[in-house]
Length: 68
Image (cartoon, rainbow, N blue to C red):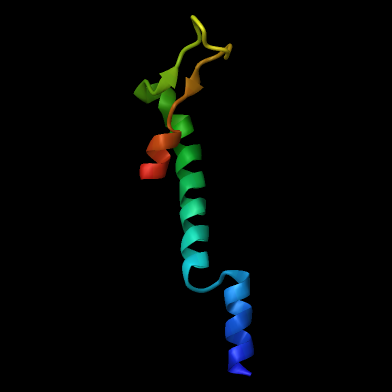
């Protein structure tokens, strides 16, 4: 019986690298949302102009969120 439970945990990703990947993805998502809100005050925005395709300032914090 314990082998079946262990196999089920591994299939669901609740043990080993699955949990690490899930927590890393969640932490990155939380960091992106938090940094998007802080970006204008910190001057971390890309303003439209020239060959850029966006119409409004866009936060440039995705890479920072991955590192954090």
